[in-house]
View 1 (cartoon, rainbow, N blue to C red):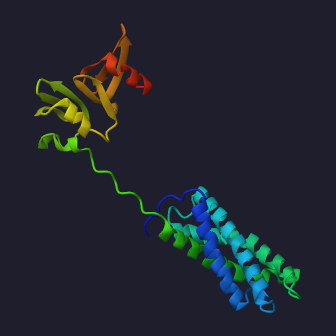
View 2: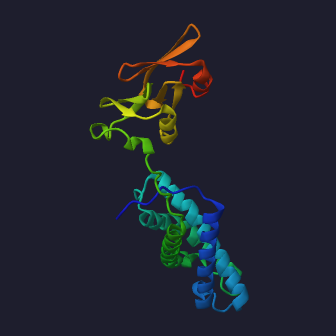
View 3: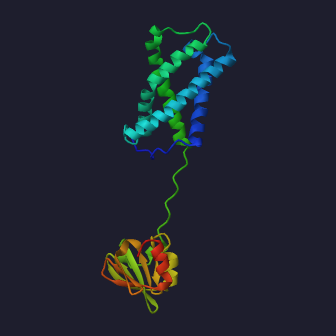
Length: 251
């Protein structure tokens, strides 16, 4: 059984779906005259059953999030739903038993309370599993992963897959500083910066672009800053870019 996405907070959209599903189940229970309500007229019986179903839906949403918080069921949503249904059964049984006082001549004595437990447990399991299943189907698909920055296709084959630490301009060439060594490629720095979008980094000098993860040390002195990269290279920070680096906490 595969793991499902993490359960998000209760939102209006998820609550609306759950209440709609619960309402439909309440209408069905009204048709079959569940819990001894068959003697009631259809309209009040339907309101009664829908209200009970909504109470169950609310309890189910709270119980499911409690199960997730406690770490029960791993991240298998339907397993978590089954556990949540078991958790909500006792309070829901009390609600069903107590609500029989609203049924004309249908008030159940306390001695019958245990008899309500089994049928309420089954209904809670069916309602919760169905509601969670429908919410999983209705949940928006995860957005497709963004393609890697185009610049990562530029390094030669021997550097493919290496961490890109910095790009240094040398005349008409760029020197690539990576976790697997250095290499020169023919390209302008301005074009490289445009293709590096998607990597946390920025241009720090007219001749340098640096990845945030590549910085081993940042020094400031005499009004200037210098970045030391993981490969030992020292990168000057020009005043043009110093303010932006300070705002990002790089220096």
